[in-house]
Length: 248
Image (spheres, helix red, strand yellow):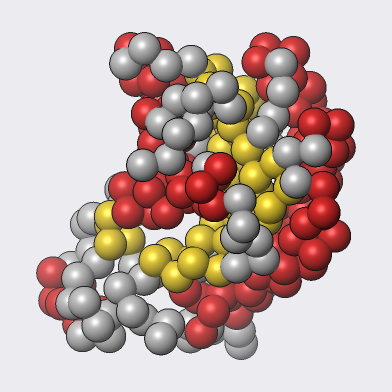
């Protein structure tokens, strides 16, 4: 597994689901973790407690990462508390699904701001910190929806596809500065938001997944931790599809 001893990571949207699993996995591999959250302080503190209870180091920092001033405050708090930022995982995201004919412009704006603009702002802040060390790992959590598209998700798919363009462009800009930028594109993953879906719907969706099952948050976290490690230093500008073969 990845050895992240001595590294410091920021994970956005880390109070639950995939973000929580990533924060726990990075800490398990030795990283000090900034658990970012927007509106779930109790859940974020539970993640911190789980990390510190296992002997790791973590702090929770509130920030709406679609707001530039709050992003700057997040990175300032991380550097003041932990000394540096080596790893950034852009995971914060929301959905506002609907057919385009019924989708409100504000639902498009909310999803783009939360899923894409936030990542751009965090990448900008991270680059400023990482450049001084000539070292960095940025991992953007995209989605199979951004790779192949999904009906009823024109806003979400656009935001997640935008992350792929951001990943590749930023990777080219800073490949010669010791900073790698990659993306992980999860497929259907079991989380608190999806665990109560009707059984017949889950079975129906399983038919479009070649491996025949949904993924779990730990599988996304493992791929992310690998990309954050020195073992992945020759990988940049890539999209790792962790989707059971959906996007083949």
